[in-house]
Image (cartoon, rainbow, N blue to C red; front, side, top):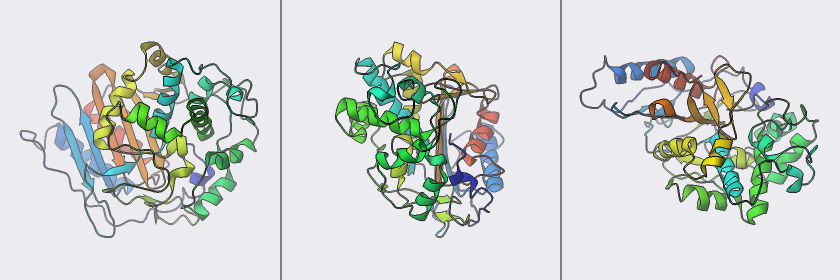
Length: 377
């Protein structure tokens, strides 16, 4: 999930010009004919890739009573034609929010913070900060303007995409705007909310957010290939990432762009295996007390039929989790409690197709076939 910001609006009309997509699915498992479910999923994914101009995608779908569906389609590099692979690392954008909010909720369990504490208790200079709570920040109901929606920020980022940003440099771009509505009055997706929550975690623990997430979330969750980078580092192997979020609207290779501008809202890296584990842990609250997990899962409507948002987590027609997007990469990591099913989609472009995120198009195509009573949309 991502704000439709000037960063996106400025380049949404730019044509996606990439090398031809060559789907390269791994062999179907024994006993799964082309006319069966795996074959239908393969065909739907290939069709979506062709229509949306997606260079490469990795998909994992796990459901009890069904063979595991793990596939890689297309290319990791449009220049060399090297195939994408399911063991590769990806930038996961706003899925970072699920880790940041988990770290915050662990502090709630430790009685070190309260969800209804005002942000002013921890961070100075937030407009109406005495009335905006940590709960409202995590639930996207603070009313704060997102720094990533600011036109000056978009220009600064796209003029120097390898720049290293600090949280303190990000927030003023949002704070110069009036709040959109009184705290709690509506839903509005704002990256400023998560940067503020990251600063709360740092202030309360006295440690860097990346270290807290590593020690308290990633290590106990055995997520060994997931990390919170300090800069532009990107462990190999990884695919090249392609975006049309550029000053000209031309497609560019964003692989080495510095994600520090996303920080607590969008900087992290992971892979298919780790996200499979995280999807269920997140949705079931493995790292939290039942009471705090229940607070996280108090979903509220956001104005989109079938979709609601809790605390750093959403419900899309029964699929619980989050998606992610930043220049070059998109992802979806969701769990369906009703069927004990997990879906992970990872791709190496964020270029919209007909106004929609390519990751949403893929997840919708997959779930329309695999779980028609619960279509991700």
